[in-house]
Amino acid sequence: MKTAECLNHLEPYLFAQIDKKRDALKAQGVDVISLGIGDPDQPTPAHIVEAMEKAIRKPENHQYPDYAGSKAYREACASYMDKRFGVKLNPDTEILALIGSKEGIAHLHTAFVNPGDYVLVPSIGYPVYSGGATLQSAHSYFMPVLEENGFLADFDSIPEDVLAKAKIMFLGYPNNPTGACADEAYFDKAIEFCLEHDILLAHDNAYVDICYDGYKAPSILERPQAKKCCIEFFSLSKSYNMTGWRIAFAAGNVEAIQALGTVKNNLDSGQFTAIQEAAIAALTGPQDCVQEMCKLYQHRRDLVVDALRTIGLDCKAPKATIYVWTKVPEDETSESFATKLLEQAHVIVTPGNGYGPDGEGYIRISLTTPDERLLEAVRRIKELV
Ligand SMILES: *Cc1c(COP(=O)(O)O)cnc(C)c1O
Image (cartoon, rainbow, N blue to C red; front, side):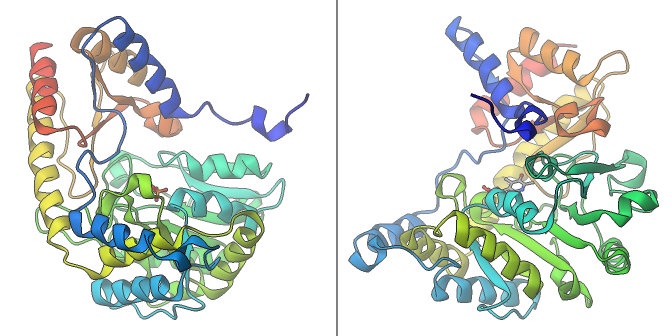
């Protein structure tokens, strides 16, 4: 049996390797604390679970869902976008339900990218942006992401021949893994650039609700020209502790939404309507659960930043996201330092090189570990000095 050629070009999935290492140590009886994966540890808020309990009992929800998402869910998404950002969207043509935003991001390539085309991806970023290109037998061009530029991807240096074949540019701020945030001027510049070169700008906004110190992250769709070339991905995963539910939505440019919908019509039949009903409860219900989560993560962020500074690492406290991103010591690589933390402190962190070429020399620490375990990890890291 011979698998498709593109499968040979995929990078091994980053977290699969980390899970393997963790399991091997655990099998030896070692008490390993994982600060590796970004998966909220707190349960989904009760009012959302209760909405699901009701929804699951309705026989009409047991049939095939509306492929694009139920009208009620798309309307709830539109009302969230209006209330939160003042962005007006037509729920019939500018919103599409997704089975998690990873699904939508991956399938966007199918809708826009031909074999041999280019996809512009940040040189530090969510692995699905380039993985999706590989699965289409397309190339990824890594836009430099450097600390001295505030980890904002630099699209001014892309060669002309790449631009001529570029179909999608992926950006995502607040950013996983760097924690960087982008301002309006950067978004406007990116939009102008994509309009000039006829490129779809895909903005991944998974962390829009997880902000600290009074910061409020924007939607790229707030920008005046955005609807001409932007599709934005929102996910309930991080905002409402719903990673396991697989529910998200895409919003923005009509043609992009329609093309992605066409791909999905042929590949899946939408998300369980009961889950969409629970998501409506999340988007339209009380939002204090989100504020509580942010408070909790902000406290954890401060603990981690303090521990890293204690061992001599100069790390910045992020304004958003559930990650602390920091340079490793001078004489270490991402891999060697992550291995040292694993072997000497029994703490798992993610080596930065797994997020792309410019991630080398960094590690990512996730804040999704219960407080007492995080405190223990912090204690062990401090002991390393
Ligand atoms: C967590 C995350 C997502 C959300 O994925 P879902 O499939 O909606 O759970 C999307 N993009 C980034 C960068 C993420 O970290």
